[in-house]
Length: 440
Image: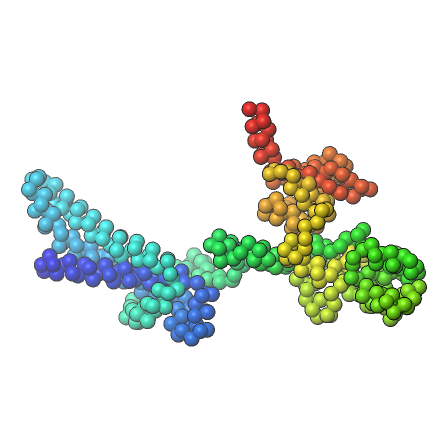
């Protein structure tokens, strides 16, 4: 054959190999979520791609048969087509025993470079740009190619499956989507500007509802305001005026003897109607939902939805009240500072770029967000920063007690009747760097 004919055949082989490389990467990289959306919108080709991904062994076997066959044939034709011309060219400058070897090396390098560039590198990079679009464009031709190579692909797959079973290799693809997968997509969306900062924040907090327990968002026992059955009208009026709560527990004598709760609206209606509040009775006391402190916020949401309640008492394993929680508390956990104004007494106050004043009752999840800590040690054993300190110190903390973890120093600043009120948290590395800078 003439040089022109050889070049035409090599070009056809390069295009064929490029198509197979393009299809291979596109079909492997096409995301199922996008393909399902296209399939549901009526695109039959998207469903064919999904079916092929579920049973991809035949395609990859056929693809490898085609790619290797084309590469070998291209090498044979290329070496035969170009070597004589390189040898003739070399003879003009050099005559010796290495002429044929140099000619072979140059022809091999030329053909290999053409295949690497046009049949491998460029098609694969193109396929990675838009895998879903390309995969549905080539799926029909790929299916025809698979049928042509079916006999050879069957033999190769049989041998491969035998070897996989021999070495006990699991070939089943795990398509389960984890939180880490979704989190990575959200991070990418935030970086690309698709998700706004607050939207990213909301979505992350929604997923954390499955991990955060009720105590992380409840009003703790010591902050619960309640009425007793013998509460005087003056005391009730004073509490209504002092505490802007919509619901108040009603207890027999102590907070652990819960009878129910009253809605502030009902009491205000009685006041407006000039009715006496000398005694709380069954007309004003409502049955309260009681939940264990081991529930997650997600489970509590389900409980609220099934009971149509918005207020619950949280008890521990000893049937003691540890706090109360409302539907609004859960929503605040999700929405954060976007739904409530910043208060003067914040739980986390940033003093400078490497230190924070943090309330001891701050939930661990909020602490991790503020300090950008991925995981606390044995965090299932406590709910708050105070609990973390007690767990680490193995004693009732005193002022100036410190714990060092994750590049931070946690120092107890104030303790009130064995309760840790406030801690100073310092980032150690930055604090040391600043000290060195000051010395300079």
